[in-house]
Picture 1 (cartoon, rainbow, N blue to C red):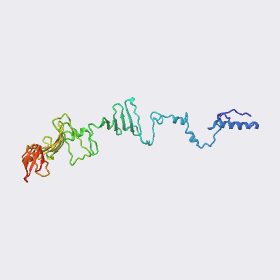
Picture 2 (cartoon, rainbow, N blue to C red):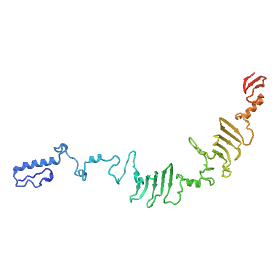
Picture 3 (cartoon, one colour):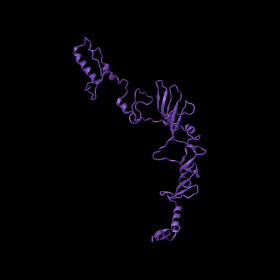
Picture 4 (tube, rainbow, N blue to C red):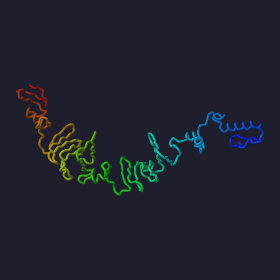
Length: 341
């Protein structure tokens, strides 16, 4: 009877042995079958599988189409790209722990970032990096709109909020909306002055303004004749032409002096205390001497010099003697008492 020659299963003849073949060749068929099985399923040691294969036919069929070692393919993946390069689609939820990193292609001179689409492929929102300007943007676009409705661009320490589909400047309507500079300039002045400008600028709060840690006021060196600081006004007289100032805390840029003023009436100064050169000078624009009238009032040099002169008959810093109310002779040398009598 014929015995086929085969190394692997594909060469076995399914009709052998024939019904009338000689029984003496049966052992040849059995040895051929064993040899083909060992060659086809050699196992790690080359002598055939040493344990049962428990994977189902379906599970084994999952490797269909694999063209090289699976582990070699995993090991050959770049540390930057997971999976193949190019556009890929993930249906469901992608969970990334710690950081999702988008590498910008600076050579392309366009935008890179994250985008959100609806099921029809319409762009609804984006978070991107502008490779040309270096700005970072966030934007939204309502369905059926051809351009973004709202964009916020972060660049050079500023946040620029613009709209492509809404004509003019978007006007905040809720208390939580952010207001841009144009809106503040158009609506924040009193009565019609901008919220901020060089020179006079006005704004107000109805009750109180609380600043934790530090309130900083920047003065400009090009305004050498003026003071910068905080002013106190009469509420009813607060207007651009007649501010009605009743007090101030200010810094004089040319001299470096700090002054505190108080006025009993609007735009008048009754008392001015100037801090300069290690001294505190208290003066009045009315020209009258600042004479203390209460026990806790501070005394200026002129008042002290007058008291000393009246009591001793000597000017401050002079030398001489005088008699006190008890009849004792007091000796003064260069303004210092050296003998109490």
